[in-house]
Image (cartoon, one colour):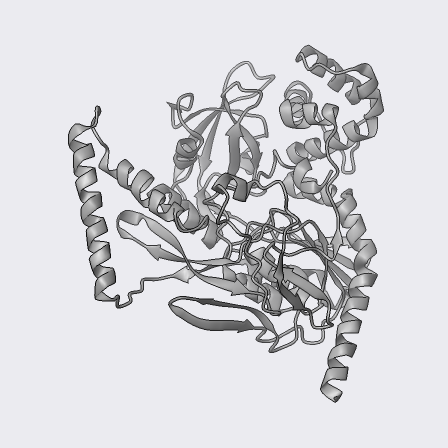
Length: 534
């Protein structure tokens, strides 16, 4: 299994119509003069809408909420006729968008979710390392019963999250239920700044081979990337694995910063143009400054927009070997406009093009938005948009970034899907185990036969139906999943993430592909030198 699937419950990537906002160009307000005939058409449409709304308000069976009618109905309905990525944000959604872009918020620092199977309880998925929740000893699996004595039973996740957030230095009382504790546990926490790192701590996956993942692109991504490479000692890097799997995008400018440090000064990274804007190219400002170690970039079908800008530029310049699945295929740029009453509008204002000139946007003209986002066939391309990389390799637009080497994540069999996805057995068992044992686990801990047997008894007691043959056949997989889940609760998300990466078969394949990345780079340099000499 790939790391995204294995940690899907721990690090969920919510990819829905309003969340793939990669390639966000910026914010502002703009105006343009329109022809009088166009103005007449707009005026007629507004008059028609006003008449319809007045009829609805007077005659609908129940009182009409004007905010809901406008913010949840009329405006989103209009935007859905344009494209899948233009979107309106109500005040709560706009606040979350800004927090994501800023890379921090103020609160207690824990991820919450709804427990499954469907008990409907709100539980802690994981506290963020170093946060007030983490320092207080809050664990994955704890049930959130109340916040400041307000019961959470009838509250939504977003309402509970809002209660946990607040100004830095303010206090909040969180009441939790924990298996093994007869009485609820009360935690008096002091809210603090909670950083949302877009670049988790990089590390050496092998001697001389660095691993860096970018989860999204916010205002800090370029700096975080630079800090990580400096901490490792970039002069010691002989190969780099750059992981963009599951990265939904973010700020276009930060994607440009990240890409630019691996290219030569002056090389094109991306360009965009729209009806109201001239062609605008982005180029590498400082370049790699002689850093030419081979790079393998990992992508999948959830790598979108700004992540595709990075992968596309490195592929077009033959600077990296791309490994994985076809990426999402979002080649549209949104400008974010601040509106009244703390609302916002993300409007598609341009298309972006990779250095070779290809438009990677997938066609959405004759399918539903559901099919667009949750497509079955990811291997599409536009045969009329064929381009060449620096060394002359053919690449296509119209279907995201096609990898240089395919790597499909292994599918779960029925037994694995039952435990991992339907029953969340490992998450729930670890919460039970830590609540009923005084567990002190040493670094490097692995499950022994005793804990495997206890997991077996617990699964039977929970009514999870499986055969003994399946359980015996999957012993290695069971140990891996228990180990990863236990690492999250005992050692923290960062250690669990590293464990997943170190045992990820796609990362192992990426390491094997580094010589191909090096050969690709050398070939491109020779081809370019030959062209210049002619």
